[in-house]
Length: 124
Image (cartoon, rainbow, N blue to C red):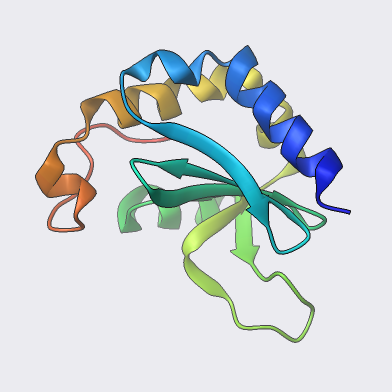
């Protein structure tokens, strides 16, 4: 069941040229879907519920407030994954938004990557 999601996520990473950011990006199987890992830490997932990305508080709240994203729940009665935003269908389909993700990935310092600060660039 996860195989189509892994292939779709791999294709999205290739299409957006995210591998060009000079960091370690890897797509792997993830609980019936696929996850994108950035320097060994999960940063996005593609599952039956949709495409979700891990965001810092300010852009996450902005996306939730303006309808570009929704709280992520992998199961109807499951807990909300607080650091993630489930992208709305129009945003998920807008591949030009990947440029922002790519910028975030290339602009992160080791301090940011370890969770001690905010990314230097916003996402979406």
